Amino acid sequence: MYLILYFCRSGEVALCNLAQNGTSHKEADFLAARNLIMLQLLLDNGQRTGAIMNVTVGDYNNAMANNEGIVIQVPKHKTSSKFVCSLVVSAVLATKLASWFTARCSFFTQRLGTAKDAPSDPLFCGCPGKSLPSNELARLCRIAFGGTVNQMRKAQYHLVSFFLHLASYHFD
Image (cartoon, rainbow, N blue to C red; front, side, top):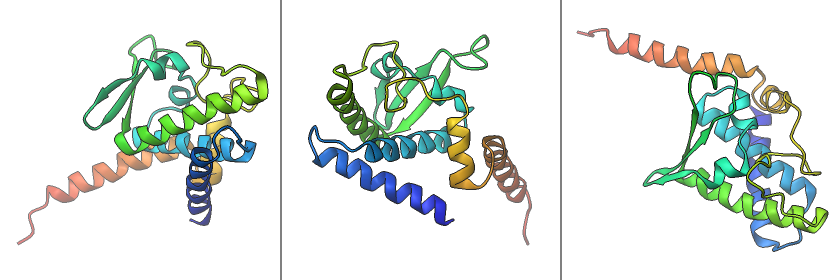
């Protein structure tokens, strides 16, 4: 439980720091905010890690907005031969993501001389602007939640099944 709170607190503080510091960004803030946003996307959507790791800047820029947030279509993921993955992003998380993306572009411009905002660039990347290792989000999930992504995805399914089963009982 402590690690979940640590990830949330450090990520939220980092988002505030990124928003307040203009173009002077710390690497630790960039990473903490990125990790928080990736974990929130993972929890909110229950997708495989690849659906989040493979989001490109182009996918983000083409997101469809609605009253409740945005929907990011991710065409490149494990089961892409069957369907395009849709990541539903709440209005609150969409605001955090937009703030982080602005800081991300500024961070890379300051460090690399380019914003790394080409449509094919990965949205979630490391400090050199390169794609993250494929197991990075799974590693973060194990640290933050103490279990695998697969266990987390099954937990959501089992909770819903339990509540549906409980709702089917008639208590007299």
